[in-house]
Length: 323
Image (cartoon, rainbow, N blue to C red; front, side, top):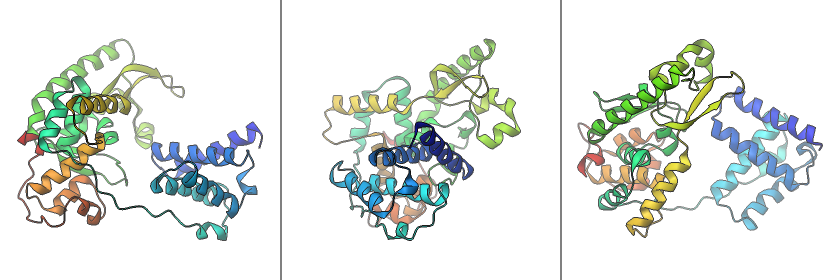
């Protein structure tokens, strides 16, 4: 393949993904795997490759690269998308490729004292994000992509828009975070007003809504709850925007806090979500309630946190409020 043909192929992959309104993360993942697949086979066009080449690529991931079953299956999904939706090739061997079997592992969970210790070692916005993860059960990406309109302090709710699985949901907002978030949002609004005065203040909108109401990109309720410290110029519109805080900023801060706390567990930002679910179940909340708060499609996914605990509850009090 020439460089021009490779560029054309990747453009086709992106177009088909966007037509189906897949998430940006899925787009980035599939494009990365297609590039690796083509590079692995010395830049031959995928239409020239068959089952043996696809199997060789996936086997190399498992035996040489030692990737997890989930990563190997992600690569397979990218290849299936490439052949079926981009190249329009219905090949019988596609269905014959076996997905890697995932092992059954229990999630890492911190105790309430360990959560308190970790949060005590964090400062600034990363600490606020970490507290929100434990207090709401959000994934890191969901928390960082929150907009002002998604927080309801009066009802103590957080609305999660277009999360994993593309099913909006509502989760609890901890009362303990209301005062500190009010202060945080006042600071964010000061920054937003300064941006407006200098001619910026734009924010990325969901694609369909951006076409319908482009001026909403400078409205307060569409701004990020956790805006980045720097601007960027959007090449398509020329708008000077802020993106939300990058995930790595919180991840690094949490890793340092866990190490500083002397906790021997391999805790990550997602560990706070696991801890949220486990502590709610330990507190007697119904597993169906926890399933809804986490956004799991199947209750069996939630069952990993407990075997019984099905007592029900009239309302939900965030575990952060008990610290």
